[in-house]
Image (cartoon, rainbow, N blue to C red; front, side, top):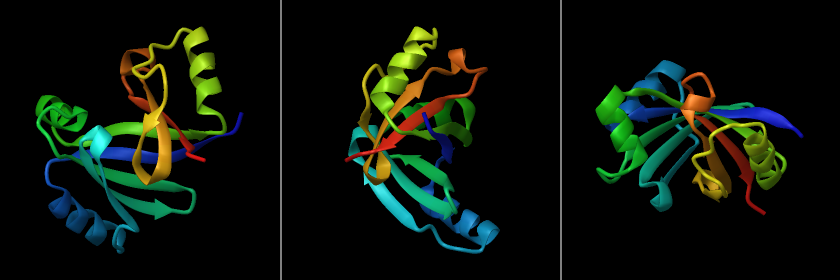
Amino acid sequence: MTRTISHIGIAVKDLDKSVELFSALLGEKPDHTERVEDQKVNSAMFTFGDTAIELLAATAPDSAIAKFVEKRGEGMHHVSFVVDDIVRELDRLKKAGFQLIDETPRKGADNYLVAFIHPKSANGVLIEISQKAK
């Protein structure tokens, strides 16, 4: 199964200010912004070849990003890997003993299906696996 790093997700308090900061840092504007209702976030993506940095800001106080920022502050939220078959990969990971946050894929940004693996199963790092929706 093909696996590549898709992006690194960074949780931020203020997306506009963070986009300005990262635009200055990287010398370019984000190539994609989106509101993801299911995840209660606004997203800005800076793409570099096959990988990207995704800035994520909460749109509701009960979102996972809002809870993360409240507990840990701004910073790296997750590492995302693209897979060929997300359902098969979730099955493989579950059988291998990983604690899944998502038993089935859900809608993510940029027309991807996503699922998360609990940080307790991955040395404290939240792992997202994703597959482009067909």
